Image 1 (cartoon, rainbow, N blue to C red):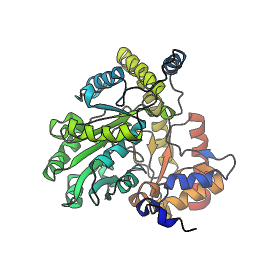
Image 2 (image 1 turned 180 degrees about the horizontal axis):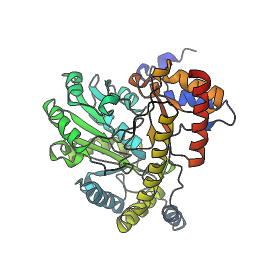
Image 3 (image 1 turned 120 degrees about the horizontal axis):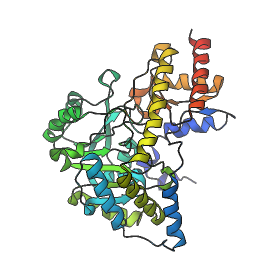
Image 4 (image 1 turned 135 degrees about the horizontal axis):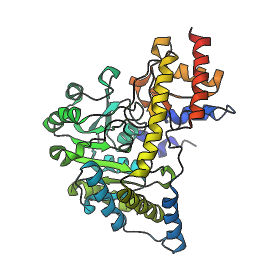
Length: 392
């Protein structure tokens, strides 16, 4: 039977995730040591889990309102104001099933067929597919290491056309660990306004910055009015499996995203929402101590890994956010995929080829340092051995 006639060709032609493809290969190699997964190695703090358990024991397992519990939205509003100086009212907050749902909602809400979305690369693997699924056209903008992997005004100007509707920023960045400073964001703001673009700002790693507090584009009034702000609980609170995120947007855009969410999802999991309430309440009370403790642990690992990789001969950009390194391997005469495959086969160490994050990442690999120091030390020793035996 010919099933192709039943399939949406646009969806069927989307390439599988480069990360998933690589990890299918990894699964066939026993005892591989992974530095590939972008997930906190901390357990969800006990008090957060306790609150979710209590909600279940109390029988609070029914649907919440579609846009999320009012108490949670009020706390998100307060948290954003206190922590990042972002002003969103509770009625501009939509609780989602992870930040990933927010990205999908934003694309489906704003895009008509063949509308273009500018995506600075290297970038998270789902951005371009989400644009394609909504009928749009993803337009990559290469961000270069010499610019700190930050998107520049000139690059946006070159890429924007009459069909461009939005730009998607993701800082702190996955996979590079790059951040954009207040000055850098202020520099691109006039270009975004000149071309009348919407700004989709994925700030899921906002709590994981090193040396300076994260600066959000949504805190600039001229950008806030055209911004869809995306965030969640997975990275800051080690709550990946809880699938709890949120978005904030001006009401006219919010209402369209809310409509899609209402019909496709109904609401985020109730017990996860109670967990989110506990997470934010405690953070606002203790001055974000739990978050800072995790961040400081990542910072220790970050500093160790940057130093260790440079000492063994890899060119390594110093990340200022998230929990990834993005070392350059092109000087070895191989691309990131060849390097990663060789490292896996010969030393059973897993890193992700940079090409999974866009063509501009092809000569890099992504290394996550969200692992124990013991594992990072062992992995670094094996990477050193691989370099000596194959590239000396």
